[in-house]
Image (tube, rainbow, N blue to C red; front, side):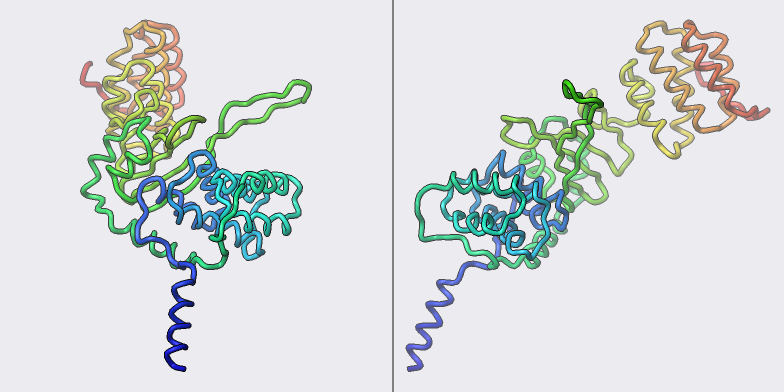
Length: 363
C-alpha cells in the first residue's frame, strides 16, 4: 500500500507543470520578461507589442505572456482592453495550438468588442491539435520578479562605465546587453511625434512612438526604438548620469565643453537648446559659452550665427551680471545684425556688476 502511494505521488509531481522560470534571461528576452512582470499596464503592453513584432524562440517567455493573459481573463488582474488585445495578437502569432484553450477561455470572458475581434483572429490562427495545452496559474510571478531583480544587481557598473560612454545610435538591444550586461531597470515610454491631421476632420493629433528604456544605476538610461521590418530594437537616445551630452546629430555622447568649444552651427544650436532647458548651469559651462560667443563674433555663416545667438540665451538665462559687458561688446562688434541684436537683447536682461565682469581669454 505504501509503495503504491509513493508511486502515485511521484507520478503527480512529474506531471505537474513547471512553476518556475529559468535561472537567467539575457538580451531581449530579459527585457521582455521584465516588462511582462511589471505592475505597469504600459510596460506589459509594450512587451506584448514587441513579442507580436519580433516573436521569441523561448517557450518560457511565451508561457509568461500566456500567464499574464490568463491573470487578466480570469479577473485576477485589471488590464486595459487594448493591452489584452495585443496579448491575444502576440499569442496568435506564435501559431502554437498550445494556447488555443486559453484564448477560448478569454473569448468567453471578454466584453469589449474590439478585444473580442482580436482574440478571435488570434484563436483562428492557432490550427492543429496538441495534448500539451497551457494551464494558467502555474507560474509564480512574484518569485520570477524577485529573481530578475537579483540578476540585475550582479552587474558591475565600474567595469562597464567606459562602454556606456561609447554607445552609438543604431546599436541593437542584443548587442547592448552583450556589452553592458543586465540593466537595473526596464520600462516603456512613448515619445511624442509630429502632428497630423485627418481630411475632413477638424484639428490635429500628435503621433507618438513606443520606446523601450533600460537603465543602469550610476551610469544612465538608454532608449530604443523599433521600425517595421527590423530584427531588433535599436538605440535611439541616451542620458548620462555623469553629465555627458547625447548628440542626436552624431548619435553618440559628447562632453558639453567640447560641443561648445568646437561645434559647428548645428551642434551649437543643439547643445544650446539642451542647456537652456537645464535648471542650473555650472560657472565653467557659462564661461565657455561666453568665450565662444565672443571669439566667434566675426563669423558670418548663417547656421553658426544662429548657434551663437542661442548661446547668448544660455548665458543670459543664468542671470549673472558678469556677462553683461561681454554681451554689450558683442552687440557693438559682431559681424552680423542678428548676433548684434541677440547680444543686445540678452545683455539688457542682466544687471550691471561693476568690477566683476567676465573677461574672455581671446580678448
